Image 1 (cartoon, rainbow, N blue to C red):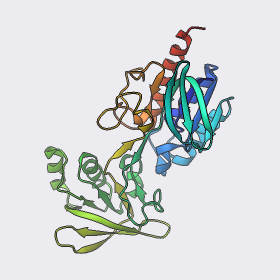
Image 2 (image 1 turned 90 degrees about the vertical axis):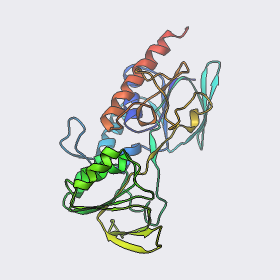
Image 3 (image 1 turned 60 degrees about the horizontal axis):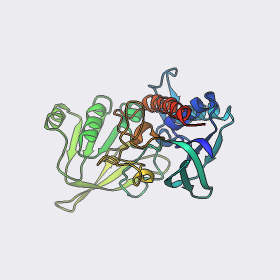
Image 4 (image 1 turned 90 degrees about the horizontal axis):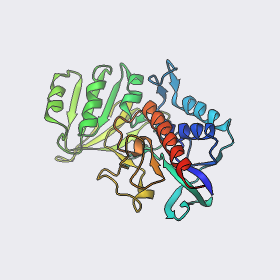
Length: 304
């Protein structure tokens, strides 16, 4: 029986683990990977203390700090279920079995909704990205494509037209973003919009070189030479493991208080999997710290 189990190895989970160690909590950190969504980005220029740092290097520093402390870690283990028990919670995990704890922090983040086209997976991090805010500056002066028709895709396109040589905005449907945002697109001279058009494939050996798009009305195809593909068709919260314990938002996000509490005592959540706005590395790290401090208060309130 651990005092605390932290599920997730991204910035929120790693920060919570550091704080847990400093509070001398008997803690298990369990995650399918180390880094979470940070693994999708090459360079980070907006994390305090670093003018520029590679995403891999930043998360390595998180991990190095966690490894300094006597925290049990199960990396590469996927949690499949969480149950409420009298003493707290019990989790099931692939490969590693069952574990119990008095409190749990969910810091499982989100996963991108993928296009599921040829070469998408292989070129992720090498031209294919799911975060224009994170990676956009890397494509200054180059040709790029933004995929999607909602507000996030339009925001990405508006950001990229300021830096890229040319931007192709490709949407499966007519644009669905706010009218005021769609109106701003007309001011961009270096933007081409393709609606009712799908991405058929992505091409490139070691990095993105082009995409092929297909017009759904005519059936015709066209190749676009681009160095970057920003996929902005939405993110899916990794919240399935708690859907039977608490009520999720329609988006799948976990509702939390300002102290990262859920509706179930002893169950906390932090980072991008929650309803907290603005999904950024520094915000996730801060939320991880908040979740741990509140979990510590909860644990100290339990009967001895």
